[in-house]
Image (tube, rainbow, N blue to C red; front, side, top):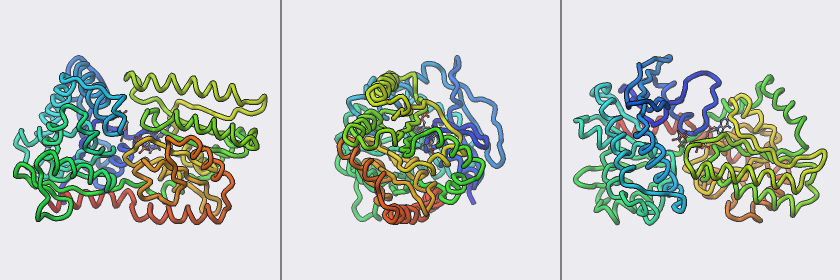
Length: 456
Ligand code: ADP
Ligand code: F6P
């Protein structure tokens, strides 16, 4: 069997119990733990020059990382990847900016990754690249003469062509993406949007080819849908491990009778201001819930040196204070806002303690928190998942209470409905979600992608 070479911008620290916020890290780490192989990416360090760090090995995984220079970090990571691509991929074009030098920096860092990676790759290795930071990596690797099979899995949404085309370098990006052999998406909607762009705006043709395969500039590119999943049984057993459970119960004793929970990186795509507004609306519209309900928002800061992220953090701090100021009583604080990460063995039992979970991104590739929450529930007394229809997870978890995150009143009504839902309905919805999640497990995501990449 071929060795797996995984490439992602961020390489997660590998230690048991480590809290790593981000869906990519969970999926990649799992694939490598199972299959072994090499993981290549940015070290997370910014140094005087961009240079590789010494390799190290943890169990079956060999890690190769590279430091970035200040200019590379600014233009590639802060600039094009997170200042331009991330907002456009999440339909937030009003929050994006575009500078040609930053796009050139993005290409330069993709070239840099390719130069450092090329000598490490053996002829029969499978190269699996992850996410929007590295759309041009296969193109750079091919320019270095690499003939291996190279696949990309995009963890984010791929937007409608009209949205993608607001990025002035859109044509160059798509051309570079077509140097991959396999492009994997979270949902059919994402893949269709990509194929739509390629066939209508980039001269690609799908005529006479297998479903989801296109020819462009003489190359055949395969596309597929691989919804990322979670280890359902592992999440549940973490959620009910007695010691964890005890800690969660103690936390619960300090909260009110009914707990609504949310867990997200502090990112504007996650719809946090809209969620806070909906909770305020819920408090205003359902006074009988006063003194009974706590909404706990866990949101560790993310990408904190980017202006748009600093702005949303200030906005949320102000809103949390204002909402509590408006509704809190001497013995009741309705909203708890925590800016930190938690180890999984604390987070999963907390999910199990909650009566409802609000996962209401404005757009999300998948959203693993939604799946983790559902998997953590006690099948006899499950909590209710309130899920944005714009999260990739909504395509599979349609037994959740689906909401439009822009509809404040609709979300407030969903909170009320979740807290008063009869146990039979909660169980039915939970069983339906478990069945889908067991089918589309993390193992299946990994195995299908790797098999398709290998098959060619
Ligand atoms: P994204 O990849 O955009 O961050 P996902 O919901 O797909 O969103 O993945 C988030 C992952 O990060 C989940 O596995 C979740 O458990 C983890 N995570 C998010 N916030 C925290 C936190 N505060 N503490 C620990 N883990 C977190
Ligand atoms: O999948 C979402 C994602 O963007 C990952 O690519 C990334 O590693 C994670 O969120 C956290 O973001 P960052 O690496 O920018 O801290």
